Length: 125
Image 1 (tube, rainbow, N blue to C red):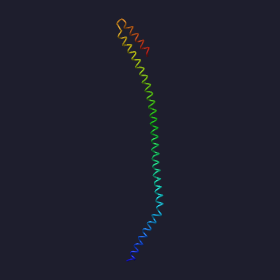
Image 2 (image 1 turned 135 degrees about the vertical axis):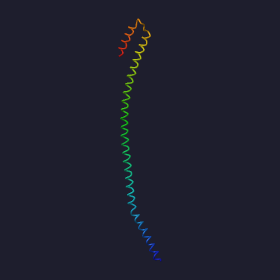
Image 3 (image 1 turned 30 degrees about the horizontal axis):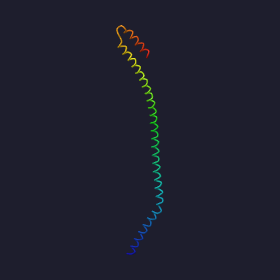
């Protein structure tokens, strides 16, 4: 029976010894593989961030171009507004002159007032 116990103990010691030796000699390899795997992960993350940054840069450039186009269009619209504002003022002056003339019109001076208004209006065109 003691031989059986000794054989069992010897088997256990041999098993644990082999396992320990296997672990001891492969741990450097496993650590190196873990570092390589970690570096691969970092490289993949860098690639993703780089692609994201490039996409954002392209989007910023597009928005800047859109901003320039809108600024040009706003400038053109401001010029148009200025022109239309001047035209409205001119038409208001003509309208006021017509209203003033209509208040002073009589059957005797109607032709003369109409001729004067026509000349004034044609002079503003």
